[in-house]
Length: 183
Image (tube, rainbow, N blue to C red; front, side):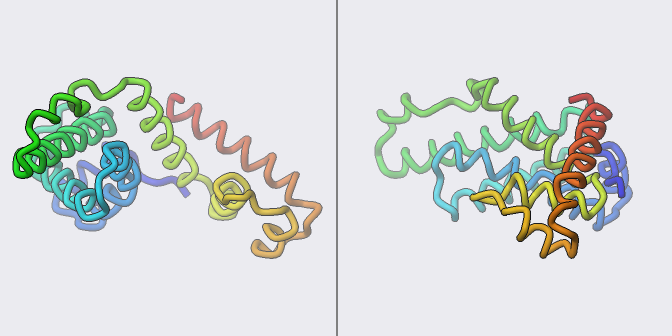
């Protein structure tokens, strides 16, 4: 079950497909929310930034030159929105002198940006795996603490002894998917 590429989703969005727009948001919501988290914003402020980013994308979608750079575009716009929101808050509070110590959006650390983009590629690759593999990978690698094999087997309706073998096949599929995506 392959999910559509960013290019296909953007094209469908431009054609007015609401389902494609919802899929685009679902694909990148964690990435966009990671930026306000980096700025240590309140949940309400993070929700405002989230909404502003998607509104900006909706407005700019026809002008987006490189659909392949969508992740970077979203990160940059989210950082700018956070920066400007924080600046307005400090100015309103009369603390403009403390603003100089804020991280400017233009100086978004490239290692953090690369890390966020890698996480997004992993989420996309996992979403392109067969459903059983998606569930197994999430259970074994995204649960904290990791789910024991016995519990994963019970939830998937499998024999406990087969989990290791299936996990290996799923990881091979994930590796192939990541390579296909240029990771």
